[in-house]
Image 1: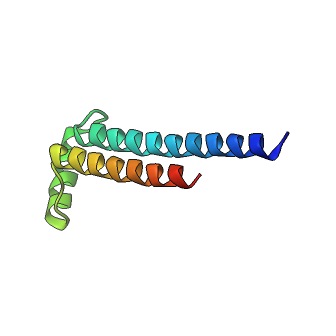
Image 2 (image 1 turned 30 degrees about the horizontal axis):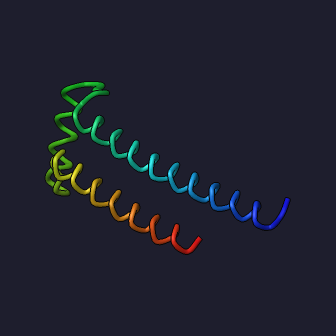
Length: 88
């Protein structure tokens, strides 16, 4: 293999790795939203008591705020990806 083809393969591999990381971040965010919405409830009583204790300790984001933060983060990651792409 020539150096030119190895460089192209490295660029493609790097782009794929970044896309995989972005996908994992978005899936983790979706899983967090699903967890917050109560998809995997074990017991309503324990869930309510845990939620009340957590609300007193730390303020929680609403689903819309959380989605907006994820969108902002994905835009930042896309901008960083575009900057890295320019250098490669």
